[in-house]
Image 1 (cartoon, rainbow, N blue to C red):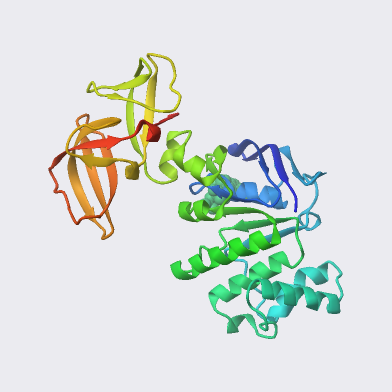
Image 2: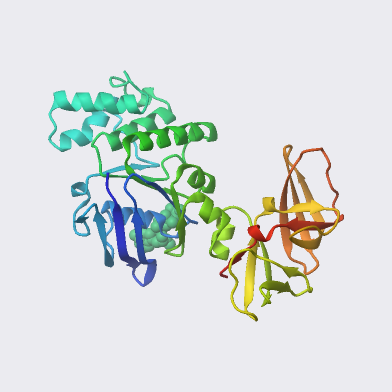
Length: 349
Ligand SMILES: Nc1ncnc2c1ncn2[C@@H]1O[C@H](COP(=O)(O)OP(=O)(O)OP(=O)(O)O)[C@@H](O)[C@H]1O
């Protein structure tokens, strides 16, 4: 169990910067997701921590040890990837024991550790089977057992569940979280699945173009996004542009919108973000913020209705409404949207 620190780490391929001066800390025993679009640098950061890639600058420490120049095998890291295939000609027990044997742990002691690891991933008694006799989900569990059996200081996971179907994936998420909690391993998890990141993590780090644009608890990054990119990449957001006037924001159609959060000085041009589920449709203006809009599309999905709307300024808006009484509004209806200043967040563009 160990803190992992990344200090001023940068990586460039040729002239293309892939990671730009990343400094962050992964706390002992915590589960952190690296979330970002394809090409944002998630895998590169993970591989730098693992030791597969050498950064052009910066320092990586695991515990109190500077590992920047330590090879992969000297870092005591457990790893699991999407395509971390098992050795097909070895039994499950041999697969799991592989890392132990390479560390010189003798067979009797190794067998005990292997049994314990297989128990932890809920595959006791599977040691004598061959990989092809296991389902995809079971094979992933074996890969996880192989990663944790060496008692690593850190567990690095690169989209380990993305090859599994939805149901199996959800099952494995629960298992992964249980194992992480039981083992107390500092875990760093690469994903581009936002729901997975929110449900599993103590902290979510959002990457964009080689930078961590925000890192925090799931509810913090979701409720208080710092940038337009973060507000859009993690969940859905509606955006309003305006000018700060007397502590509120004046939109171009003259409507005034309030935010409970801090705003820059009078005259500043700002962007406000509001989550679609935080808005409601009402008969008239109520408490808090309100805005007129016209429904352009109705998406009926059973328990939840999605409305796509257009404001007077021609801005596209989205709204998610619980289907409580079966009322479905129609395309073309003019409505008033209401929402709280608490849910109005000023974001950097
Ligand atoms: N060996 C390499 N040589 C040149 N460019 C590379 C190399 N490895 C990665 N890149 C580039 O670095 C950028 C970041 O890649 P990385 O794999 O870290 O992104 P990612 O966020 O993990 O993306 P994905 O979700 O698609 O896996 C990409 O633009 C990629 O093309």
